[in-house]
Image 1: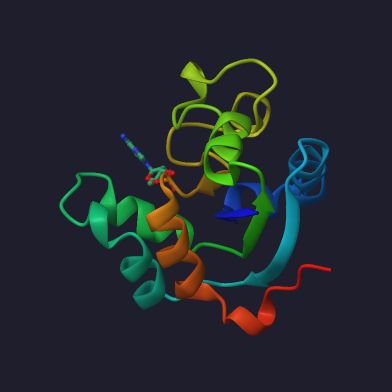
Image 2: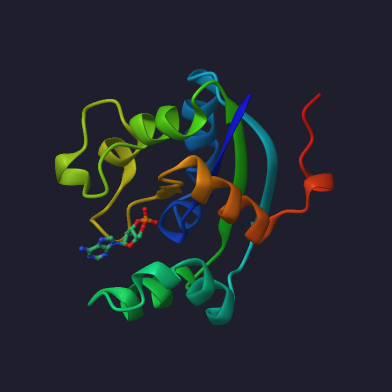
Length: 139
Ligand code: CMP
């Protein structure tokens, strides 16, 4: 089975739609094999998004990602990275396809409700950033 890493972001936790998002994930044959609700520190958020450090939106992104609770998750399934990216839809909800999480729930390009890894290599790095292998439980 393949794995990807997911974050349900503060705009979604604040609106009480984490269950609705998990329902879409599970309906699409991805299993939530690890999950925790946490508040990111500035340090942790900056580390996670270090690839975007030079981007003009970096400071706003860190402020937003530390503004409330997030749910960090490990999702498992066939072609998990590609599958979750399809379910999420485009980063900018204006460009997201009908039926995707971002089309349905994202507020704008920053407050876009979910994050998903963009490659298998990054999925492993991102999972390791938040989870010990012992926390990942696949029946
Ligand atoms: P994510 O997939 O988590 O990766 C980086 C995040 O930065 C992205 O989702 C958005 O939340 C945010 N982001 C990406 N591009 C932009 C942009 N052009 N303007 C503002 N925020 C952005």
